[in-house]
Image (cartoon, rainbow, N blue to C red; front, side, top):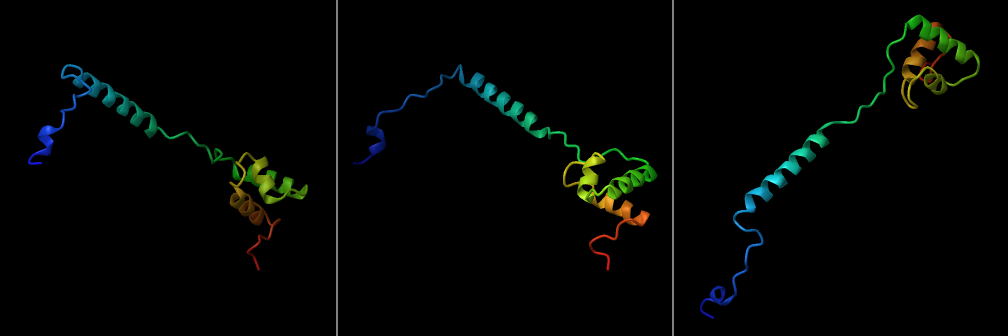
Length: 104
């Protein structure tokens, strides 16, 4: 009971002294590769390249006159669903064809 650690058998290390640096280098290389791949974000395109404002407004007015909603017009003009609705609404308001939901 004096010194219990001295009576326990020593556990042998799993790696020998000669293979330890090699295993460490391999682990570090894997971590570095994982970090590099994690840093690259996926390319995400949410904005359509700028179109001539007059042509944009003309197409929006034509589609609005055909009975399409603002969100449907934005998708028809090349925006992803949920994007571009404010631009379409501004173009329609400027052309005098749309009041907007907030206009009194």
